[in-house]
Image (tube, rainbow, N blue to C red):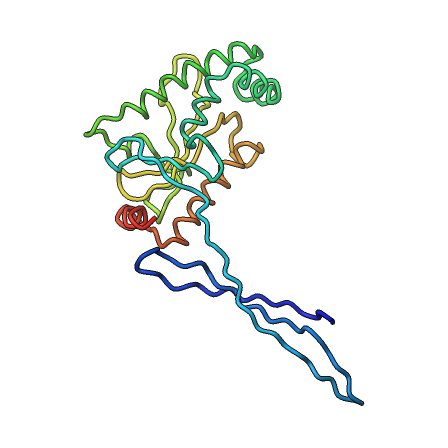
Length: 239
């Protein structure tokens, strides 16, 4: 018995009217044996089909209960992305470890050398930002809260990347950021957040991770043919 080759070709499965999309099918071609006869080789092939269950890697929670502001719940996480960042920003031990690990950037960009002051400022700003996000009134304009991620961008993009931050602070510019994907005007999906201590997100691992999460959510939406709020609601109805 000799196994020479294994080849897989992904094929999308059909939809079932009762149970939704069927698992994707993968065609597998095996060469299970070879018999030599003089100068000829006789190959014995076996064809089989393996079904692979398609699993969603994220779900979505409605923050405002009116379909205007959503947040991602990543696969395997107990809390959604919004609750997770607010929990971190109110955790003194987590903040102390974070600012100790990033003390050089805290000093370089904000001229703050006292970790305790950084912790106090973070918790105070987190409370204000949480009130801003969680207490959004029905007539509030989310486009004034979530702005383009790129400061130079002046027009909307398909599933554009956005950020929210406190606009005013009597101490220093707030380093808290909430990141989101814009579905349509005034409708956003929060992907996460970070304490941004540097000029660009690419400079530190934790802010670079937030960039990657935004791109992950954006790609997921595109793969599910979600390009606006209507297709998003349609997807939720099928999920």
